[in-house]
Length: 107
Image (cartoon, helix red, strand yellow):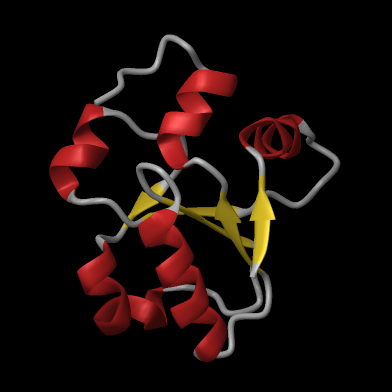
């Protein structure tokens, strides 16, 4: 499973010359409501198996959670389902807040 650091993801999202990744936030709805990366799509971890058909297996897919643990588990699951371009966000939204967006709400 590939990993991406928050600053690397920020640079990618800012680069209009690159195809943008799908940002999949697998935290619970209450967590997503507190804070999330703009443009991310929320599908709670427990719902991913039932909703996997909503995701494009050929797209670059960055999986996000609070600290990176749940997203790593979902990323491994998606790889087993045939998703070829799955990337885990190192440190999750907590890492994003610390390294990219210090104004982001944290919990």
